[in-house]
Length: 179
Image: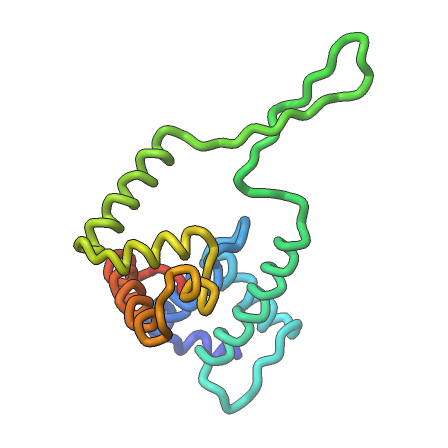
């Protein structure tokens, strides 16, 4: 294992980092470097199996997928919401029970960034009403047949608009992690 990893070229390490970045999308508290390091550690200490005969990137990708999947399950079961910060505990002198107040941390920069992203998104649509309608349906959480029925489209029209929308989104952010 160590010899195979030592023989990695810079391009192979970059590919491994890109794979890790893809698996870290949506994980609370994980960065691509963390996932790659954790995977290498588990492979080298024998916690994860290195199957002989497979390309090292395949082994890394499989192990990273498994570790990120476990972390994702842990995050879903966790009561911690990464978007909410708890203020420091406050207690009255006569009250012995500390009180925690939640606070959502949306900064003006976050709001401005969101507005800029929406403007870029609608600019990318280029006035295509079908794409705008589909984006609104997706924003409402509708997907597939449910979105198609809400929009009153047949399957062909929905698929064509979905493919156009996905292409435009990919052009806006090529590093976006598809679901």
